[in-house]
Structures are given as structure tokens and as C-alpha cells.
Amino acid sequence: MTPEEPSITPYPDGPLIVRGAINLRTSDGAPIPQKRRTIALCRCGLSTIKPFCDGTHRLSGFRTDD
Ligand code: FES
Image (cartoon, rainbow, N blue to C red; front, side):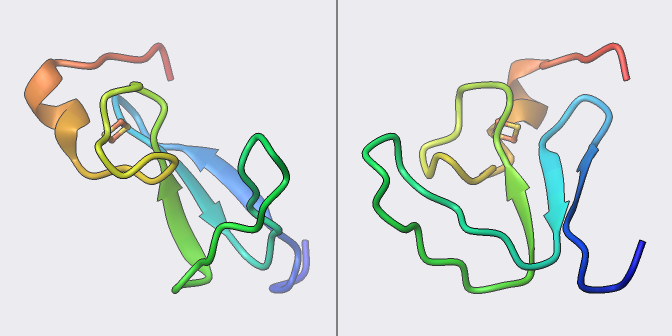
């Protein structure tokens, strides 16, 4: 994998960590601006800034198998 190649890594009991250049879009296809090349995407469903993680998973007791 080259440094430019995007990767997605699940964080235990937390978000998906996305590294590298990706095109993040809404369900309508509109671009979602990214301020960083590494972002955390919510997978607990409780974030107030979806699709990004805001840390709420820690308070909710969200658990994953990985
Ligand atoms: S995974 Fe962090 S708020 Fe949902």
C-alpha cells in the first residue's frame, strides 16, 4: 500500500478511521468537505456531526467485536 492509497481501519468500540484522499459524499451525492486527510467516521449512529465521530460513542457504551 502506498502512502496515497486510502485505508479504512475500524477503531475498537469506536469510529472508522479513514486515512488518505477519498471523496466523501452525502446520500444525495453532494461533496462533504474534509479538513484533514485522516478522519473518523461514526459507526455508533449517535454523533451530532455525522458522518464524523464526535466522541459520543464513549458515553453510550458502544461496543464492537473488532
Ligand atoms: S463512533 Fe464516535 S460518535 Fe459514533
